[in-house]
Length: 352
Ligand code: UDP
Image (cartoon, rainbow, N blue to C red; front, side, top):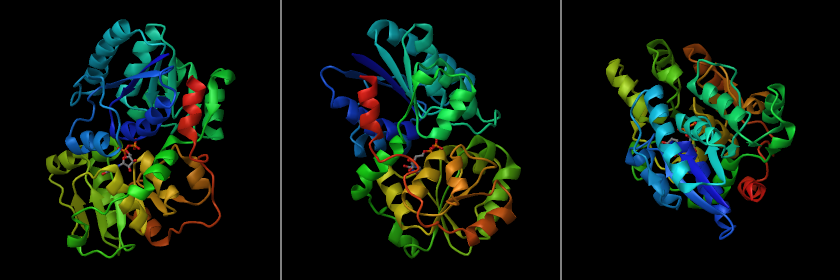
């Protein structure tokens, strides 16, 4: 069986690291062709993950990044269609909710190649997010939908997705967190910051709804400025660009660094006091590391974290961010929200 996997963005590299390894256990019956769309292309947003997570080199790199959603999706569609025609895979595998996800799923569905979608059924119910549009459409193009939770499954059933096509498998990011935990690495620059371990906020900001709106970005920065703890901010290239174009200066307690690799991120997550983020993946990693999380968005797809008190929703209100950073605690006794760390082998067996 030949599987054509389409990835292109940072969180997809991390998810593919564990799933590709699980698929490789089924060789030679299963053969995976890896396509990198090029959506993320900076060394510290792409290359570093392939190197340190030992992801196989992509068989194809389409080099499509830096454009608008329409430009990227259109160019990806065209190139992926060519690959589907030449490679003739039995399945196409896509992850999450990026333009690469939608392009892979749409190109495959039109060529009658069945699509498997990992991280199916997630919903923010906010159609202003490009990610929400990508995930809804991808779920409705897919033949095999790997939902991380029962809530995600229920979302799919409500939209009329065929029950037999859904598998609740837990979250492959939990597999990754467990697998790479022992290799977590302190960033080389950490000691020079002179910030004690367990006494900083780890922050990431990259959602378009925050970075593209000066009111949101200012609100978030004002909220973080009110934190008594220093804030370490690995700065996503989009956010860096927007800060520059809006001429926004970071408050003195925010220490911006370049994006880090996964192993350094895992170390920072394990050694911070709390996490403030608009990232989907980082919200879950806060939970894996037993750290309280303040979400810098008005809603989250990972609703179980909120209902169990692991995650407080702050949006971009400075007052809410300050208050939540002060008050949030990780609750005791919350386990097993995202499976048992064996999602990737389950997915590989299921596809086979
Ligand atoms: N991440 C990383 N380095 C960073 C920031 C994030 O390795 O500087 C990892 C993080 O640990 C998580 C993933 O990137 O595994 C989340 O990706 P991102 O926040 O870009 O996307 P989202 O999860 O919001 O789709």
